[in-house]
Image (tube, rainbow, N blue to C red; front, side, top):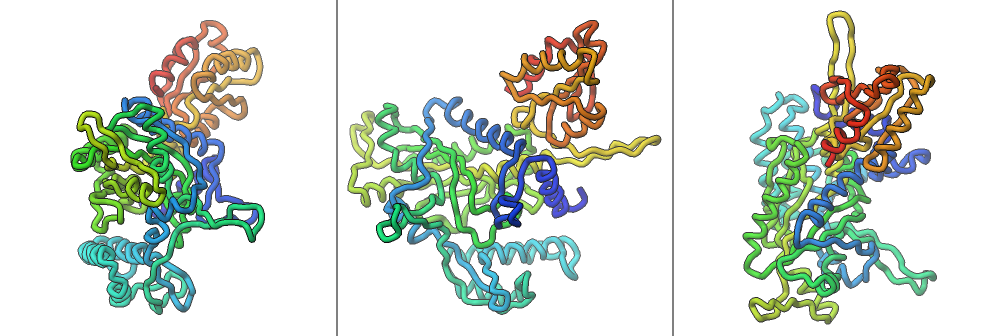
Length: 486
């Protein structure tokens, strides 16, 4: 599309219209930055999650998976540093009372400079935008809140609501959601909804290691919900308050973290490229300001419609987590290395990918508007060109008419295929309209059952991306689809 902002809006509209993603509680006017996955969105989400899980736990010798609880003992978050350190610098506009995350406010201004919004020409502010972001990164790394406010005031960055630059001081805001555990308010204790899934892995380190008889190096993977009280949640499902992570903690000998960090950077980038996305859509971004637990960290960024943004983080967490949990719990969390004949607290390399962000990445890559007009006829289609293995529906089975035994043959094919992959059956409307609906939800294969099928057991298979059609045996349909999705 001509405009990337328009493309994001088109994706949002398409997701709602075709059953992928809806605003949560929409009949009550919704809930800000919370979304529900519809019938096709939930299938897409499951397929991406399963692909990640398989690559981590099934195709790798030394990684196992767990599913830890969302609720954890509150001391967990004290030991992990979240109570004291899990906060972002925020600033309020005094006129609108709107609160902004400082880095998001400055990044949005830099994006406007680069895009030429206002009196500038597109691209003319590219160097200035780069310098502003570099200054911001330096100030954030130094926790220089006065410097950040000064930068905002010097650039006359304005609130989008009030249009003024009347700003408060910059201050920290903790992002964890708290709740009460207990049936009576006076007896309840404060606990937190987990802001990440990683800590469930760390507190189960010894349980998994001993019961699995695992030797270092080994990993523990987990997928699940996490919750962050984002003040500025935006850009559809890119940043939400309730989201899902796919994380793996890889336990290693101290001193080997540099090699394993590079290994997992390369391995995770290969995974993203395996989705059929061009390498020029990805880049690594090294962190200027490291988290309190890390000695190295980078993001894998994808070129979303709104620019390069993080989709996955790779972090060298040292021994921070296990060491702190050992200190706070008073339980020994060391590993005995028989090759070295010594006990030590393992170091950790983390890979952490946002499932919802991955879904937005796949949607951004797949969404296409195609002009199919000819000299005689105007025509177009919207198509989601998902990798077949990720498509919510793999095969659409379409009898040409609703009579003369064609539905019965179609349902025989449905029975033969549905146990192996998700199929869709439809009789309504012309075959052309049905093809367009299947294009819109990303179905890679459509099979039409017609009168010739009754004579020779052949069907017409249509390929989504090329729209080419060919005549094949009905008995070969399942094999053709399985070759593309496995």
